[in-house]
Each structure stands twice: as structure tokens, then as C-alpha cells.
Amino acid sequence: MKKSLADAAPLDAQPEGRDPPLSFGLFQREQRSLFGEILDWMLTPLLLLWPLSLALTWFVAQGIASKPYDRALEYSLLALTQFVVVHDGQAQFTLSNQARDLLRADDADLVFFQVQDSRGRLISGDPDFPAPVAERAIRPGEVYLRDDTVREVSVRVAYTWVQRPNIDAPLVLMQVAETHGKRSQLATEIIKGVMVPQFIILPLAVLLVWMALVRGIRPLSDLEQRIRARKPDDLSPIDNEHVPQEVAPLVSSINDLLHRLKTSVSNQKRFLADAAHQLKTPLAGLRMQAEMAQTASGEDIHRSLQQIAKSSMRATHTVNQLLALARAETTGRSLPAIPVDLGRIITEVIEDTLPRALDKQIDLGYEGPDHVPEGCTLMGSPTLVRELVRNLVENALNYTPTGGLVTIRLWIDRFSGVQVMQVEDDGPGVPETERELVLEPFYRALGTNVDGSGLGLAIVLEIARQHGATLQLEDTYPGRPTRRGLRVSVRFGAA
Image (cartoon, rainbow, N blue to C red; front, side, top):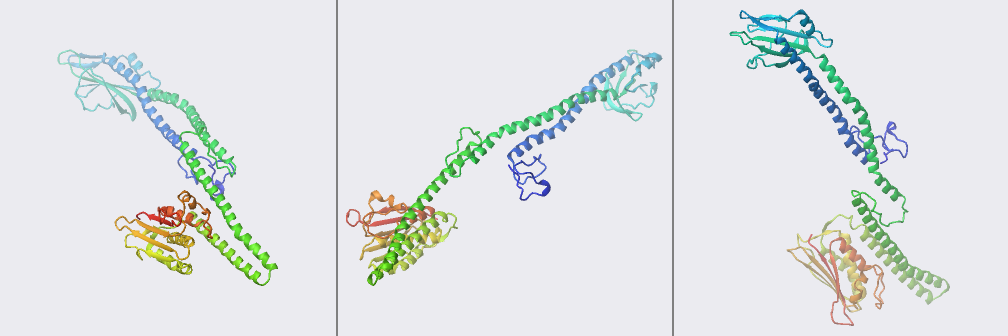
């Protein structure tokens, strides 16, 4: 993904062809990067969990470091209890000076001890030793541990109550405490042993994640290069055999789009070729008649001008039909759908084409309502629906002989909202084998001797499709080989 340079500030501008720097969930990109987002979601939890891992390791290391020193403190306490003796009902603590010096011979920590009788009188040791909290029943001989403070220094305390088997022997409270120097030092060593490898492993993990992502999205880059290398006129499907499973639906959608685009381009090319062919005849006639008029005189000039007028009318009609078909194909889907009164449109078209019917002495009739009842209107484009009705009526007038009959009918089902329009004539009709062909642009049945462009029914079919309607061709007079007529039925579904 290339970062846009149009909206970027000067400090954020990147050289052409280089990717923008990645962010770790803290900065917003002007354009989303799949690589950057995946990297963010993988590295952000890793970077957040790393400090949490260190904190948990610290607490675990504190517990691991305390256990052996707590056990040693308990052993020291039990060893000191051996120096408690009872004489004449009085507890005494007989600790030699050598043993006292040995107890406190610790370079890393300070050691404190205290011996009290059951009445709280100091027998030996440090007088400023805090007493234990009386929160549990006294069990002589059982060792307890607690954290406390002696002389404003945090210490770990082991204490127990000593009772000799003599009769009426008093309870003696003995406490031994030491500072946390050795414990903290051991915990620090454990943390160092854990952190140093993590400082090496974390960058390696980031590098491996980066390399894995680069390798993982390489098929996307290969697909991009394959698409960029294609020629502008190459609309063949993209080979999806070597793309990842997750990208296969995208490639399938692109192939479907290419297929539709290829069909559209082919239709446009055929349309342009047919249009050029259809326009070539009237334009050639115009040129020939103009050249003849230059050398003619009298009646010949008048005849040439009449032919020029007919040719220009044919060319104008063909151009108008081409524009109508192009408008139906390209703008029909983008026009807003609004209520359409089909009965009113039919009556307006009949009023417009009535003079032409009178000129050919054709009986033009209508059977149906002038206005569609409320709640039964179509939803669509009034312009295109009017074009559909006009083409059907004009097509019927073109192929109906002088003195013939053209009838337009409109049926409306008030319950379902379905509307059916029929336009029938008593002309030569269309053979059943050609009814699919006459719906193609520029196709005209042979032997009719009627001027036209062959676009009328193609326009009707396209507009009907865009309004969800169906088109049906059948004989007006079945069983009559000489004058079968043509009935065109358009069925509009419920709105």
C-alpha cells in the first residue's frame, strides 16, 4: 500500500515508491495497510504482555527466593529454643557470647532476636522487637512467619512459643528476624536470568513475525504484479490456482467482473459496427443524391431533393433509435424509481401518434383506463416507460398496412398490482423461428418492405428488463398464414 502524498504534511511525505512507516496501534494512517494492521495486532499484544510477564516473574522470584531463607530462619529459631531452660519456675535463656556472635555473623543481613516470658517481660535479646499480633490460638512448638519492621527496617520474622515439659513451666515467646538483603539479591539474580534472554528473544520474535508476514502476503504482491503486467485489452480470467484460499473469492469476483466487462465491450463493439453499417446506407444515399442534383435540372433536381429528404429522415430516425437504446442500457439503472401511471402514458402516446395513423387510414384503438387506480402504479422511470410504449405503437403502425387495425390494451389486477399491456396489429407478423432474433439490435425480418432501423423491439426488451417486466411475442390471428399479425405483451410485476 502506497501512502498518498496529496494530503500528507511535508514532514510525513515519503519518497515515491516506498511504503509508509508502520504504526503500532498509536497513529492513524491516511490509507489502511493490511500488512500494518496484521503487524499491529500481532506485536501490540506481545509488547503489552512483556512488562506483565516481567512483573509476574518478579513476584514469582520473590516467592522462590523467600522459601529457602524462610526455612533457614525456622532452623535458626528451633536451634535457639534449645537454650531456653526453666529454674525454680522461671524461664532463662542461656546463650553464650560465641553463639550470640555466630548468630549475628551475617554480612548481607541484620539478625534480631528476642525472648519474652508469658507476661511480656524481656528475658534476652533486642528490647524494641514488635510483639506478634494475637490473631490465632497459641500452639507451643509451632513456628509462624510474618513480615514486620524492626528499627524502621523491614524484616522477616519467625516466632514460636516454647513450653518445657516441667510442671507449671511458663510459656516463652521466642522471635528471630532478619532483613531482606539476601532474598532481594536472589530475586534480582532470578529476574536478571529471565530478562536477559527475553531482551534477546523479543527482537528475534519481532523479526520472525515480520518475515512471516512478508512471506505470507507475498502471494498478494505476486497477484498485483500479474495484474499490472496484463495488457489493457486482456480481459481473460486471472489464474487462481496459485493464490491462497482466502484470496480465491476475491480473484473469482474479479474474474466475474472481467467476464461481464468483456461481454459489455463485445456488445459495444458489435453495437458500433452495426450502427456504422446502418448509418452508412442513408449517408451514402445522401451523398449520391447530392452529386446527382449537382448535374441534374428541372424535375431531376426536385426528385433528388425528395430522396435527400427521405434519406435524412431515415438517418435521423436511426440516430434517435440509437440514442434511445444507449440511454436505456446505460442510464436506466441509475434513474430514480418513481410512481408511473401507465394508463396516462399510453393515452399520451396515442394522442401523439394519432395523426400518423390517420394518414395511413389505420384504426388506432385503446381498451383500458385513462389512469391507473390508486395503489397500482408502477415504480420506475416515466421517460423509459414512455419510450417503451412509443416504440411498440410505432412498430405496429409501421408494419400495419393501409386500412388496418392497431389495438392497445391495458389490464390491471387490483389485488396483486400486476399490469399487462398488449399492442397488437394485423400486419404480416413474425415467424416463430425469428421471434428471438427480432429482439436483437438491427435485426429485421425479410420481405416486409418497411423502412426501419431494427432497434425498436431491442429498446423495448431492454426497458422491460430494467423494470422487472416480461416480454412475449405471439400471433394476433393464429392459424392464418397470410395475415397473422403480431401481439406484443408486456407484463409488469407488482410494485
